Image (cartoon, rainbow, N blue to C red; front, side, top):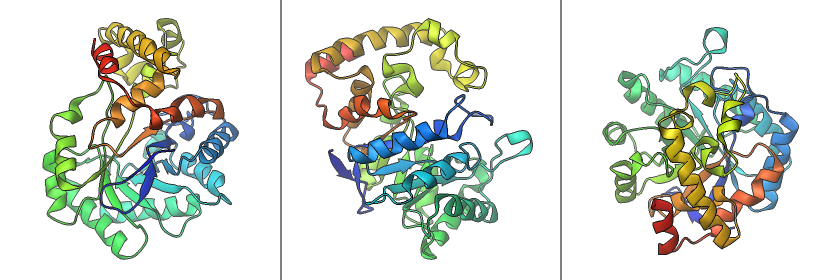
Length: 313
């Protein structure tokens, strides 16, 4: 398993990590549909066996359910995987997400996360979204304080713009950033990734397979049959026209490249994100153990100029 240092944190991470969003289950406003906890735990254990050494989760994923599952999975694992989680989206009425970066709210979320995960300190704590924007400074100062207390070892952010990163940097160093980045969501290439590379900010990207679109297993028929409690059915523009047709054409190109290398199309999609020099690691959302091997191959996959030209069409 290839690894890279996460920015200047000193953490050596596998190029692919376990994403635990779907492990939060279905019963909240950003769920992925039904998910069995034993499948989640088996996926984490299998990834650990293959050398994947970090897990990314959030208090918002099932409002604690994902973290509780991760806590069960890592109990007794040696070496223990690094655990990254996020705060700033506490539970609101009727299991809906609200946004708060107030210092007291973030502390309460962190305390709950530590209890569910069974940890004394987090390896990385991140602001999930910079919302409300006017609370960014308060939220980032709170995370810096939690680090000083020793409750978290490193602090980072997710979904921040360059302007928001600079506002946070004026208070305390931003150690990591987690942006969306994939072949169908390349906006981070313009400013975010160059800024992070220039300033030594570690980057782990999420949704490198476009929330499942680029795995090679998505078809029009499967998308039409997504359950009502899967957020992609109503909120993911990549799964609807006019983007859907373009994305399915891209998947066919990924399949041709994957066939040349003897890997899965999803591994090609993940490897494409890892080729960017600013990117240290990519989050892959495993829901079952059999999904792990095909995507972990991305950590060692080197794409040629010919591959890249075909992917770009």
